[in-house]
Image (cartoon, rainbow, N blue to C red; front, side, top):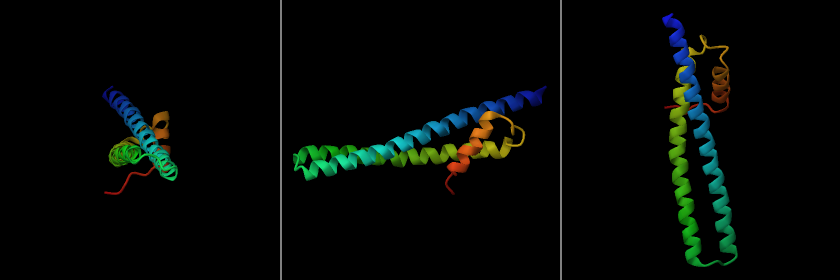
Length: 115
């Protein structure tokens, strides 16, 4: 009976860690898009000879987005490593679990960084 509970706990942990990894990946991608959009906006403002202070303000927004990318990349690496550890530990026992299969696909597409 205890084994079933442990597998249930492992399945729940996979579901949680998978959700964290997916959410953080989405956040990281969103910040990347924001940087691209903000860079284009600044370039357009410069070509249109916009007010210097307006350009400076947009450059500050860009710097904030760049800082967020660095933080989200770190958190994404941690989330992927946590997920990979769970997959390594429980992958065989939960081979048919839908979340485990999705976790394996996510890790294939986004391998965790090497330490």
